[in-house]
Amino acid sequence: MPRCQCGNNKTPSSCCLIKISSKPWTGLPKKVLIKQALSDAQSLAQQGNWRLCLDICEHVERKVKDHPQTIYLRALHAASLGHAAKSAVLFKSIYDSQNGKLPYLLNYANALYQSGNRADVLTLIEANEKAFSSDLRGLKLAVDIYTYLNQNKCAAKYIRTLIKKQPDEVVHRLALANTYHRSLDDEAALAVLDDALRKFPNHPELLFTKASILEIQNTDQQALDLVIDILEQGNHSAHGYILAAKLSRKLNRMSEAYQYLDKAKQELSNSNQDTQRAYLGERLAQARLSGNYKLAYETAVAQKQGRKKSTDRDWQILEKHRACVSQFVPSTRVVKEESDSSSPHLFIVGFPRCGSTLLERLLCSNFVASSYGESDVIPRVISSLTVNKTDEWWSLADDAWNCANQKTLSDPTYYDQSTASVDKNLFNGLRIPFIRHLDTNAVVIRCLRDPLSIVMSNFFANYMQYEPWQYSVESITKFLFHVDTVWDATVNPCDERIVTVKYEEVTQRNGIPSTLDVFLGKYWGAQRVERGVIKQRALAFSTRTASYEQVTKNITTTANDEYKHYISMIPPSVKIKIAELQEKWGYELAV
Image (cartoon, rainbow, N blue to C red; front, side, top):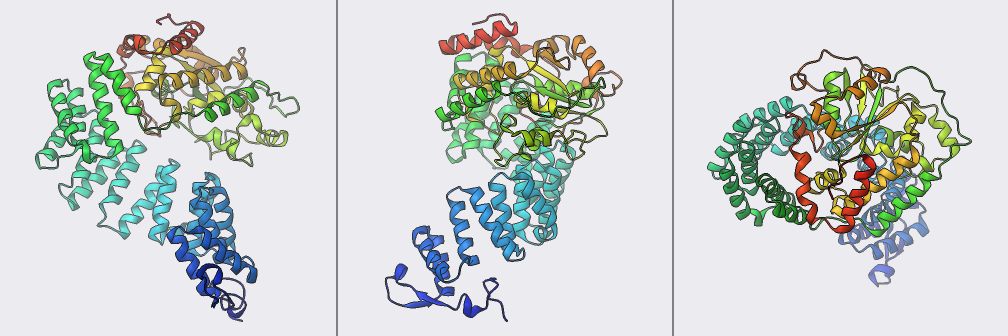
């Protein structure tokens, strides 16, 4: 028997050729085929009239239970409401019933992506690589997913296929260059841009992207010459003037930097929000450099306007987290036996802007080690053990905890086992008991910095991936206290494989402090390299963090003293909290 065209495993006469009354949505006592009714429902969905659309679905389902098109429309409705998990379940049922047809495959993959189900969406793409590569929508979705998950190598593969299919689309070449740039392969990024410029000469966006990469590489004069050429060709834009201002400032040509920033201001009316924030970021940098601290503080406040703040519910969740962590008792849980051997796995923890990227650079310069940047390995292991993907380690049931006992960080899907690893997810400091459960010998370095410097540096930073706690000095200080409190509640002060290092000790020594060096030699299973000037050795970084640009230069201590100038501008309640941490961490009370 012929199968219905809708894909249902029924004959047409038992499915889409059945007639139903159209009165519920047309007001007319007329019968129409289910096929026509579903076409009407699709049109209503496109118009956003979900009430009538779902009414039609209900009437269809009275005749044909689990009709694939009604499930599809209900999945779209769930997605429109932001119910990604429900949408994923519905799309999966259609995908399974339709033998993996491409449109349903893409919808299912997108729903998994939106629901944050990383493991399943990656498995789905890998299992259907040919299908994703054969269709433009599939290619673009794969690029979006791999880019979001920071899997730049996979993203680059699909972008290269997009370029083959659409060689005249500049946007794909820009995407490939930016993908290489994010993974720190700037030479490959520049090669892509130079190749693109041969096909699209004097293309302003290609040229600006090239100049931005040259600036990151600290070839500032070459980058500035390129930007000036672009601007002189009549490609006036706020982005171009902001970049020219930044490069001039870095070359200590301040009068030119001020002039370029004034010109950028004149072009801001037609700019997007990111460009406007970049303008404020450069104005802030110029104000700090010139010692106009009041303007710098006011600019940082303006830079945060329009961004999301932490809500009362956000803080309530953190309070619950803190309470659960403090009550955690692994009494009935399997614990791995300790050993005297060293571990190749090192974790840098702390708080953003504590100097962790500098420490990461020093470790990768003095030891044979690969850095995984702000890795998601530990959160990914936890997620694999939970039903609710937002759960944390302290909420794991005993069976899940004991299941984790079978996992090991030596699994090559987590870290490359050919060298020692450096994982710089700072908030792994909230997961120390779980890390210790996975590897009893893992090495942990807690990086501290003067709390005043941490708070002000976070306040001034223009993060690409913004978090609500970064909105104000009050919320930054409050979150800093949360991280410190959880550390105290979960970390054994007698754990010999955990060491605390202060950022100021690193900058004063211009390298790894001697106490840390001895500690690493005893506990970290990484081979030393011949000592030399840090910047002469290529680093094994895998991601570009907010501090990357700073640590590619020589170590400086100027920022250590700058932040005291902002004390008078900080609210009194924040001053008290900062002073508490300064005293606790052994810093001079500056407030």
